[in-house]
Figure 1: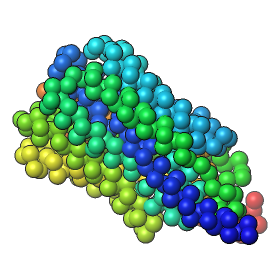
Figure 2 (figure 1 turned 60 degrees about the vertical axis):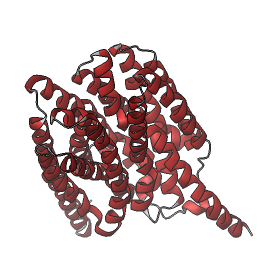
Figure 3 (figure 1 turned 30 degrees about the horizontal axis):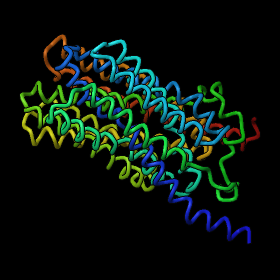
Figure 4 (figure 1 turned 90 degrees about the vertical axis):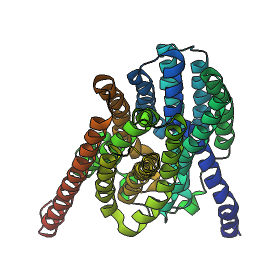
Length: 416
């Protein structure tokens, strides 16, 4: 009888949790539409490109730093409380920015720090929950859990462009995001719950019950540093592009509508990539990670020459497709190494590399434009970093494989 009860719970509650997870990520993914807001702030209040780009950079960095204690909070108290707090802080941050009247520091405090804190509280909750409900499909569940984060930018960028065309001020748009997206995030967060322990199962990797979860153990693993390096290089280029995409298009001579629509197309690629790359990982496993970095390097170089509207749109979407891969591949790979229940504890440490990329990437893109008047060199720099990431990840992972093989051989020979 108890077994049937658990089966019925899995049948109905599991899919509801997946839907709620996607909706929550859809709401907080509004930060990836910042490029459209940034262009409006530059036009309406005269803020510099490096200033508006740094707002997103600080949001991403704060988001990743907060994920560390938030991940431990999810492991201790469950996903719902952290996600609800995250939704409230997200809403409050945009609300403060809506009253900033072009003040860089108030905008930085609102959208940079508070929104980043809210996202950090909420982000790991749906990811951990989905992996716990369906641990056998790590790639697919990771992709579904984070798809909304990319799709949210698409919907918001389209909405922002439509409101700007109707004469809305950027302050009014920020206020609408605070109320609409914030409310949606809180309602979705209230639907999150972990499955019964019997559905999670006991056949988890030993790492979930060992000291390997501690940072002083992780930093001794070349596989951990491979994940950190790969995450930084995979997200640097994407964040540089998404933080400056509309201004990039405008600098190429595109009309505002065409440049703005590229933000939405990037978001489509980002959302689709999170789904597709999860399935690819389930088939190719670890080989997928350096492959994605190599393809991204090529696309970032091509973006430097994409001066026609259609080409710019297609390359933007392709860049989004590769950018979305990072948030699926590294989480799924960590789940393969350490088990799905450990993701909320280990993934935030790897995600710090994304925070560093968020702080550096958008700012570098904006600063290069401020100095040179062109985004061409920024695209090339991002391409080189992606290329270096593919090589560095492969070398570190190979070192990890060799070290593991040597250790097993010594153990078989009787050496501890």
